[in-house]
Length: 383
Image (tube, rainbow, N blue to C red; front, side, top):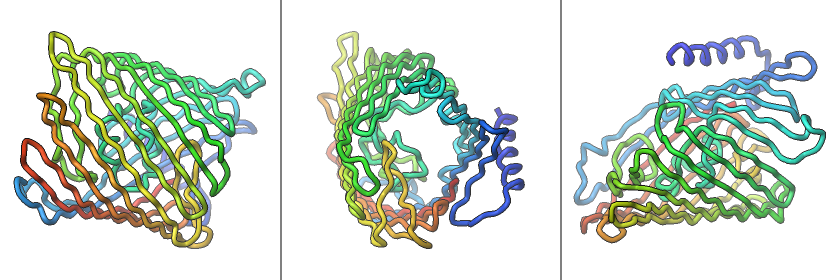
């Protein structure tokens, strides 16, 4: 595993050394291989600082110590022939885990007409619009509370996907866990979205996604961090739920972009069906946030929202998010939490982004109110 990590890092350094050039505001490490193929290197490095204040009652102050460090150190390499195939490998050196490792086959070049694409390998499960998008495009430092609780991560499987200007659809089957040896079991998942407006700066996206999982572990744990990442504290947490036979996940997603303004939201639910007479358990929540790009640009869109690309040297985006998660269900008292998050993103060209978030959290679990405030900063470099 260490050898594979070193190979990826060495490849990136070699590509950087071979690159001539270019404008620091638009860095791209791509190398043609002959007339038809292209080798591309990618990276996403994010350094965070988290600070905490107003810890309130029922909180161990030592658990919320201020902290600084890398949140992500992602590297990747891919080989591509346009309209035929793309094989990519990505690894997060900070978490020491494999990310997407997959082969994508495009029917347009292979069959002469577009009837969709087939992806084989490890990739993200589709429920959780905010979580399924690329981490480099994250509008806030961390995903909203319900996305953290419901999103199932990456699994090994196969997916068929088809996109048209006004809609998209995909169906996936996951079997065999992930490359880290976890998440054993089977999952059937699907996602579809209607996008009657699909132009630059003018987007309306309405979608639904769902999955049915049968975990080999027969266990599930639902919890969420307080929307900053350099802490292991969870204010809401069901603990490990035993006897789980089937896990159902459902998400409704929406995105509206109109010039410099945008709205994005989701409603999410996860339900665990348990055997041996144990009570079924459900967790549910949602979020909504608004964004204003002060400098006048628009958020990008490729089936998910993407970063703002500055029209000149830089762009400034201001955001406000409300998120809510309810993990109380019958005898299971995981708690309820609602967060308000103020955000600001400063984009320096295509490759550099500075982010600041201030989170007002309010959680109640077992009758105890916990309402800390958290401040997060991020410096991100990606290509």
